Amino acid sequence: MVISANYVHIPKTRLKFSRKCPICGEMLRFGIEPEIIKSRDFYPFPHIILHGNPIHALIAYIDAELKVRAIESSPSIEILREGATFNSLLQKWSNPF
Image 1: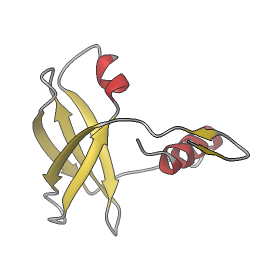
Image 2: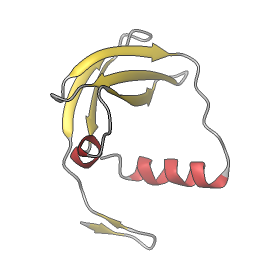
Image 3: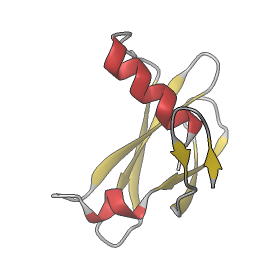
């Protein structure tokens, strides 16, 4: 556990996957927190992985058996700069799992 002035960082477990990005060809390893999977109302659900330079997205669709059913990519993304979104992004970045 890591403690900083702003929050307590507790490493989380995650389900691990890997897929090749159709845009850049990079093999990406990514994870999803089990709590997120358990809270889903529908399957498959999209999981978005932002990466690359220029930044783009790999979208993985996870099914009820916890397998990647399909992937697609998007070269077009937008990250809103309003306060709550940007702060959430920074918090997620500092504890990606």
